[in-house]
Length: 140
Ligand code: 5GP
Image (tube, rainbow, N blue to C red; front, top):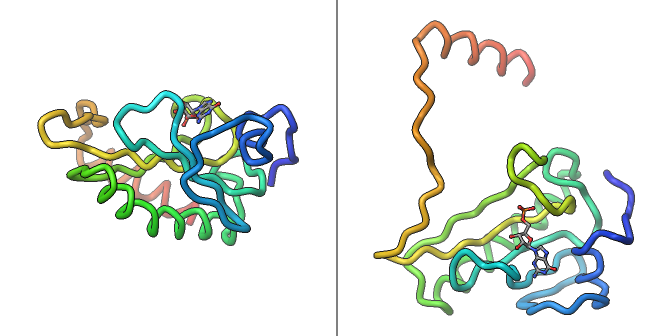
């Protein structure tokens, strides 16, 4: 687990040093509106304990974040009258992570103005699929 970094903006939000539109807090997690929302109700759920992202977080901390997401997502969907919800977690810079404190994005989706995240698929031959399958399974 990463060391606490007092300069991390999300730690300042947890401590109250930086204000936020907090929607939920308990002993383990903190949930607040994203300051640059990509849809109405865009919420971030973070652990109070610092972890860089889900690649370095403990099972216990990650479970608590995911449990909060499970509880909050349908309530947010209902509150903002959304039609669907995406859950996103960006891990490392190449995956779009900008704030290095684990956070799950809860992103409401609205029929008629759906935000598309998927790009064109990579084209692979069956042999390449097999190679990748074998490589990943050897790490599990
Ligand atoms: P990432 O790209 O790291 O997955 O997402 C970081 C998110 O944090 C972005 O969506 C960004 O808008 C949000 N964010 C960055 N700084 C602040 C802040 O000071 N307050 C709030 N509420 N959200 C922030």
